[in-house]
Image 1 (cartoon, rainbow, N blue to C red):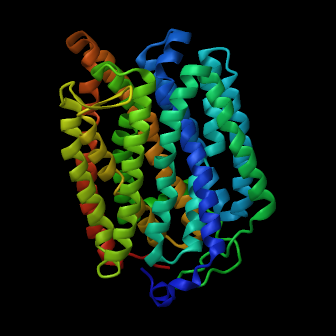
Image 2: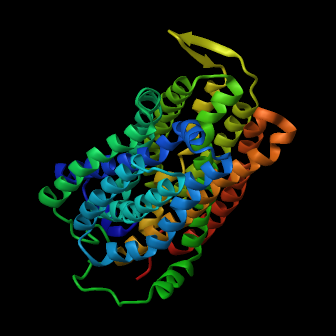
Image 3: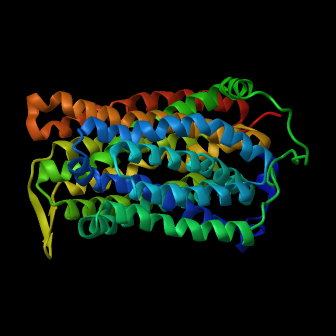
Length: 442
């Protein structure tokens, strides 16, 4: 936390900042629904194109992640060098077109290509949005603001996995993709014609000069950021965590169908409402708690994610191993008793997000935040979106001869192991960040 930010009054943040935060959260939520809704499309896409779990893991993960990673760093540099609002407006427009193209795909190959276009359009979104949030809120209020931004997708998963499951079941997976593209057109228009870019470095100790930073090559820029030990450990921890959490989020609906005998619609409804609500509340709570405790000691920005990881592991293992038994039936919707553990896992699994993103904004100067966020997102996307779903599908196919239709249960257990490594990396992050006072130098 910088000295200047600590002296600023909380009331200096106006309603314009809150309004832009809401819009950014809605854009992020729409993007995320486009990813999560694939979870309720697994079975119908497999049936239509006659592909394996590994192929589904490829199209839901690696096909997206490879392009996203390739475009991420150039997009982050654009965030640092051009108006961020204009960049987001163009991104939303391209995302709408690419998402609708997914619904029009006539083959599995065409669907994979459309997913790659979605990845291109999404590449600037997270880095631009978090760079903007860092200029909308001071550090002592930033974790909660970031938690509001990152909680939007968890709440939107209620739409993506419950209403989305209903749309897929009644109108088909193609209609669901086309419907997702419509809100993005509206967001693009609002950003283009009604929003201004805030001043960069508004809350930093050293005022940001309105000149372009030294134009380093992409590799040189990445090496300079990677040389920061606290930043390096932090983004690696986030990547390993995302590997596990994204794999579980992607395959959870299929797990409920295969291991607990639920219909696709009921599984999507439970995964969306229970997991989405729990994760949303957990994310908001961790952001609020981080802001509150970090005013006393900045080490809480790392301690809260560590505690969240340990609690999430303790909840996930019984969830995946819990026998098929009914807790209660609401109308015609059966709720397995294992969903209690799933709700606890979802609540704690997101505790790392807001404090970690806030810490990234403090470890790097304002004119490199876009690139730093892009590099962080690239690592998380490659490991999480790229490796997580794919390796789960591979494990599931490999374990099929041993466990039959229960192979997915044990595959999900295996992809939880990287979270232990993430905890160790966060401990290293705390040690390295304490040497710089949890802020960037220069």
